[in-house]
Length: 200
Image (cartoon, rainbow, N blue to C red; front, side, top):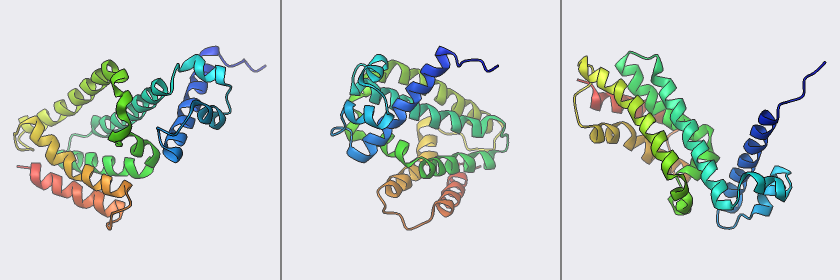
């Protein structure tokens, strides 16, 4: 006999469905023009159901933002988790960033659109914790590579700018439809360029 789904599992799925519907609406209609009614319709959920989990569109947008950031950061740390080779690690981080954007255009468009992030203040505490964990994970890996003299020793802010600055610029162009170079080629070229700039 089948066991009924737990209330917790059902609630988690409902929340995920609502956030995914909100992301679709923000992408298609724009954040400012999206209403909670639009989200309810897209999620096939009653108004009461949506408001049970999220008290406002801003609170829902903040949850969507944190979910997207979490997915991106977790994936990047997993890339480095069992990678000890400095060259492969550096190139893999750049490739991950670029390919994540190409595979997740809705998430990327939402996360990188600074004009609609007025609600980010609602995420400040959680975002600080997430960023702290993310930066710690990255910095420990790169510190090990510097200590073993595989990567040049440099300040953290300079390292991040060299590592992620060029691929962030490329992905901004990609999201706005202004790129010429294909994703795989860009990931390879920018990954090698990052390695050449960071290696000893």
